Image (cartoon, rainbow, N blue to C red; front, side, top):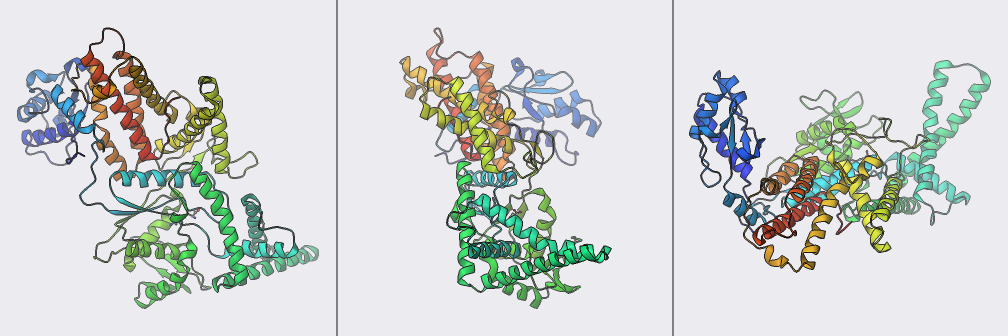
Length: 620
Ligand code: ARG
């Protein structure tokens, strides 16, 4: 294990440049960006800094003079060849050539178990709110994102050495659930369903019917009040209202029964829970996310805590009565947070306040990250504000936990509208996964006809899941993206299969090397001398890995790591094209360096995929 964090050369140069700029321009105010990127003329160096141009504007000097001033103060000992005025190209680009030993030794230091990412000295406890399905409903594409992105954020935090507690805030309580429980009991009494064998699809249908039945009341009442009139219509509406009112009242009574532990109600609720969670957790497993039963912490688990929480808010004067309802007003948030309705009922926000209290004060969270649809932004703003005001986000040691809504956008269909089936229904997540697997299987069957059938099935499954997850993770989280099987399953371009293919190619290379009698084990511990620009470019990108994981993990932005893995896979392809490895005439030193570099690249690609929850394949 490495004890120190590996300093990748680019980060080291950035620090040294910022120091030089500060020294060269002591009167400069504000942020300084050293603007270091890969050199555009590799014969001049590995990196170039473009900082002189924008700085010149800020200080009113000529870019070239700024570049000279920076170069004069720049200290690159131990990392790059000396920099002088000769290193300045054009109007003021500063070229840097790294010392070959600096790259080689950084690479060998990184080529360790933890790939340059040692555990932090002060790990945090981080709760990640993810998945959050609702009882009696199928998982749809919205839950794809809260599960896949939530799990990726959790894995990133784990990879950075933090303690992560996953919590799925299952929508399993309240009147809508009581409605379906009531309806199921009626149907069971009529003998028209068998709850032992009922499927989630059937439950979903009954759920919708029960909701519609109870809702008819409000709509019909509104209508009759507005239009009044026609005797026949009125009579019909009245009948419907009565029916709806009865259903509504029965549901309310059912909720009270559920609340008080009535045996029949509770056992029917349990059945609904079992069926829903059985199907949802199976989909989570198919998606290869680490989301299991032990992570479920549904709304129902807070039900005993809501009464005391409300009393606490009232007695301490945190909440106040507003037009008959109880609200928490927070400075800077226009809309007060409603925590108890006029009729005495509690709300989504009330439960979320209780959840914050438990997560921070019992589970010990330093941070709580909510991976939930962007449309709930106001809800979380209100809940975070109200909970913080109430002191529920304060840990026993007095520090205040960081609450964050890691919002995500919509999944769109090819028509750029939210993804729906042809008949306008939500697309079932499991159906999407199944179709992706079928499509991937066709591809694998034609590409790798010589592999055994069983292996082809496994490869197809992993490619399909990788494709879906990569497509979801690689776009900026808050943006909408268009779901396209063709695009995500392509083996070329910024896709999951492309990244997996690079891994498979490197495995192939190693296999071939062994077949050719190369002592691979000794090659993998050989001294690395990097001469070719393509080797150096690949090596420098490999060395960026720890920095990229940190950037993605600290900002809850899995797309940054996806982008890096794609760049790395592309850079490997360039390297592989330019630098022969097992060909005749390649000297042993080069061969071993290149083999080791290739295998290190593969380890980074695999570790990156694992950190995002993307499955890989041995060959394809
Ligand atoms: N069940 C909710 C929904 O489907 C998501 C829960 C999100 N988490 C939370 N703590 N509110 O919209």
